[in-house]
Amino acid sequence: MKVVVEHMQTANIPALHVYREELAQRRLPFVIFIHGFTNAKEDNLHIAYLLAEKGFRVVLPDAIYHGERDENLSEMELAVRFWQIVLNVIKELEWLKNDFAGKGLIDENKIGVFGTSMGGIATLGALTQYPWIQAAASLMGSPNFQEFFQYLIDTYRQEGHNVPVTEEEIEEQFKALYDFDLSQHKEALNNRPLFFWHGMKDQVVPFQPTYRFYEEIKPLYAKNPENLKFFVEEQAGHKVSRKGVLLAVNWFVKHLK
Image (cartoon, rainbow, N blue to C red; front, side):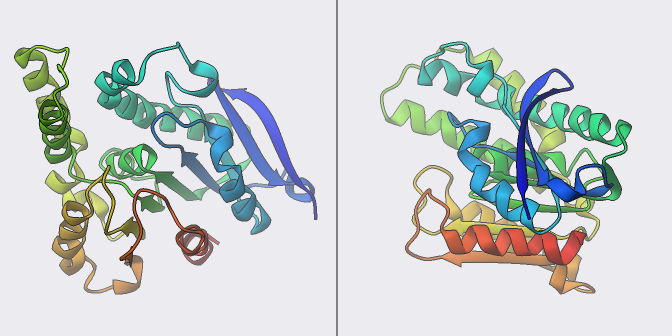
């Protein structure tokens, strides 16, 4: 078995396309993997390899201002654009899906979205927009867009940073996040398989709000509890363990194969 890693432009987005060579022209279950803040598509090749081994077609795009789309912005300049980046990633997911579907390379009834940190946040936001996502995994993500937005603003200010946006811009951004905030649109889940991984000592994306959301949506999965899982690692911070990665990969094997 040979796993191919192909560099490509898909829907004008630089991406890596990972698949088993003997399955190159087959319609395969499809997973889009979204990287974290300040990372790039190459940083998650080990995850794509594990999925490809299992028979998935995987695409790893670069988010705007990241990887090959880098514009030499400072970390603060990137931070100010954080939500612009997240919402742009969500928009581009449909472009990626349509591009691969148009080429006849994916089973459109078996599509998953998977992400870590910023990518996990975008994954959860995407569930509010796209019924075609059949399964999702969010590692260190947050579904509470508006709450997390306010947390970030408060954190920057407490650390003494000057937030280089006006109060009007903050209010406008806060309102714009409502439509993508899964905690405000729980009905959008529609019993779709959803996996969470989070470390309790995460200092970047707080554990508790995400776990609280999980507890709130449990009743929605009462008829199919196997479609919802939250794996907690008590000693983990903002770094996914190998066990977390393997559990997420197996989640897609269980729900999309």
